[in-house]
Image (cartoon, rainbow, N blue to C red; front, side, top):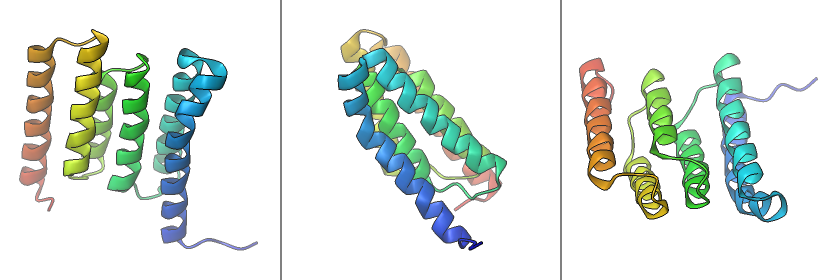
Length: 145
């Protein structure tokens, strides 16, 4: 039995999350918005949980791709900024510093939520800012780069 090097396993999970993100639209067309988005979100979280359980290092790319899935689900009216907050909390739990891409995806999620009428612009913008500041502060205190 061949054992893959850890780097290959990490890249494989990045690819799986990327494929999952590409599949959301297709699932929404074939199964409807609710089932398609629910499937993608569930499987994305399952992959993250599986990686944690098996001690596979999580990378920024994993979380960026999960946020891209969430952004698509929000555009279909099936997720919210709260789900994105959970991603940021999970990133903080593994000491990953949010990137500009993560912030951009969170802003996209917030804008889509506002467009869907499921968000209050001032309140959610403040929540996103506070969450971002909180994450940045916890990283600087922990000595993360």
